[in-house]
Length: 222
Image (cartoon, rainbow, N blue to C red; front, side, top):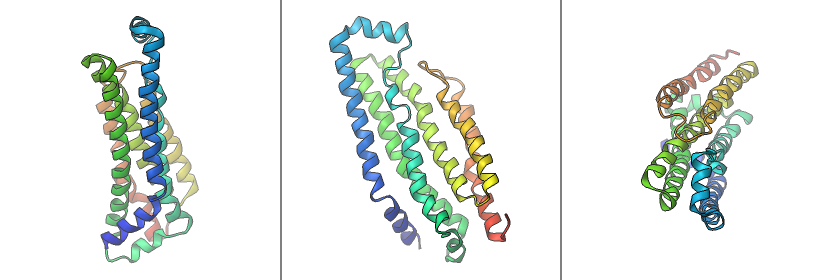
């Protein structure tokens, strides 16, 4: 049964996912090339002054690639399920419907994590090629909130798309918007050095939350 579910998710993502991988890889290449050009045309001293004094976030163009990738994966997975009313089929499978949804969600998360980790590692590696180890470490912890923004955006969209009641959808959208945008408030290096664990723990509530709309859908509640 799980092989059938995995095949279904593969068919949804087979065209989109290679494009997402290619796009994110291209953004990393662009970052590498642009960083090299910045050093060649401005010199080390000017670049360091911009980073240290002007708080210039040199890899800011990667800021929303995490979110965009996660959102597109969630849309590709869950819009067909809700728009074509496939959700009710989950209740007729030989596998528990909650297990089925978590399996689908797990595959989506794994797909996002591959892209997110690639971006996170790529930015850190590129920074280490031009800056000392301390600066590369700073880049890792500065980009980490964007990584989690994508992860929780995926979970939030999965919850919203599975929900069938439009009023609740609007509530989820509003709450998720204010939550996810927290990860984008820090525009300086190491902005979330101490607060990130607490913010991430709040987002873990999305994991069990997807059960609620499924439970209401099964009972025929609005």
